Image (cartoon, rainbow, N blue to C red; front, side, top):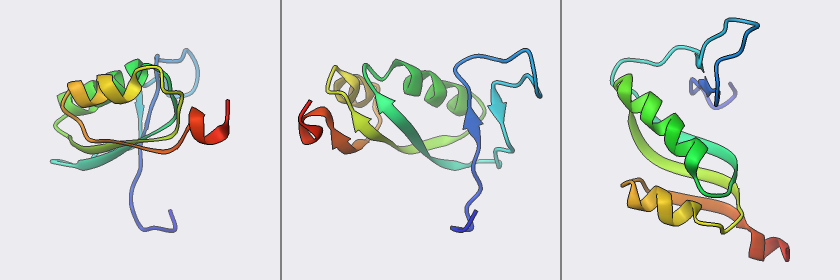
Length: 95
């Protein structure tokens, strides 16, 4: 990528096509990971991704979402012990 950083994709379920993997890409040993989520509602999916990456030896440094729907994601992610940041919230968008 242009930033010179590697990236991986964590799927919410294994697919029956392509490589069929839950995690696409190569996770480096002792990787420090910034986990990015598009839209966070309760945070359940991003916490599952964090769990899968942690089980592979990664350290999650922060979870960032583009839009926080303000339906519990921040609270759940922070309660799980992760730093959380949202670029925008539902309130910011006026919905």
